[in-house]
Each structure stands twice: as C-alpha cells, then as structure tokens.
Length: 102
Ligand SMILES: [Ca+2]
Ligand SMILES: [Ca+2]
Image (cartoon, rainbow, N blue to C red; front, side):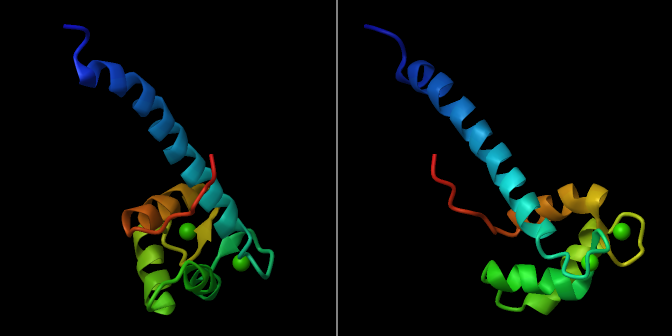
C-alpha cells in the first residue's frame, strides 16, 4: 500500500514554494529600491514607471499610477520604504515576477 502520494509530495514542495515566495518578494523589493533615482528614499510615479517598464509593463506610466493608488498608504503620492511591501504585493498580484535560480 504505502503512503498516499500527496502526503509524500506535499512536505517537500511546500517549504520550497514558501522560500521561493519570500525570495521573490525580497528580490523585487531590492529591485524597486534601485529606482530611487533622486535619492529621496521614496519612489515617485516617474521612478516607478521606469521600474515597471523594465519589468516589461505595456503601459508603465499607468501601471505606476495604479501602483501608487494601491500602495501609497499615507497618501503623499510617493512609495516610501514602509510602503514597499504593499507595492511588491501589488506587482506580484499583477503577475510581475523575477526568474530566480535556486
Ligand atoms: Ca525618489
Ligand atoms: Ca506614501
């Protein structure tokens, strides 16, 4: 009989996918940070648009605007360090990702 197949596969697959998700978020966070071109510690729409363009966005300006609407919690029009997580969640939700080799 042996163990059910799912039982054997699950424990090996799950930790790997969690690690991948964490890596993905970290990589994307670092990626967005690089686009703070004027060094004010925040991302404005222009800087975000450049980031989304390099991620292959069809309409980076619009994508940046939508990202700000979604992730700008204090409403100042910029994505600051503590809003980066929401920005990353938004980007992943929209299907942006990095190919990270294991
Ligand atoms: Ca900036
Ligand atoms: Ca903000």
